[in-house]
Image (cartoon, rainbow, N blue to C red; front, side, top):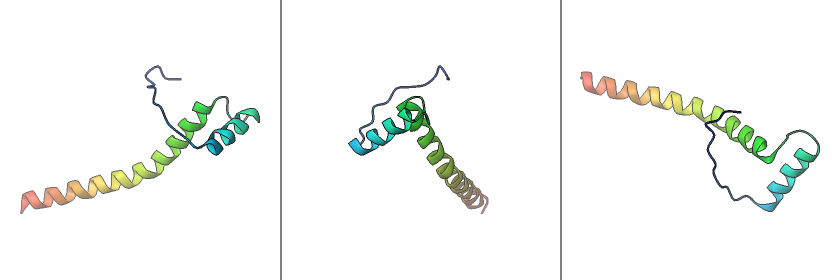
Length: 68
């Protein structure tokens, strides 16, 4: 695991904690933090594609505005 990880606090509903604990108990994950990291990683993968496309679009729009 990377040594540059930072600690954050998150409040979650009890049902989410219980579901994570069941996944850990069944051996799908070793810790709750592993579940949270994977969930965030997957969400960011999805949104980073959208964010990157929007950023390119904004840069192209700004570039054409400057050249006119």
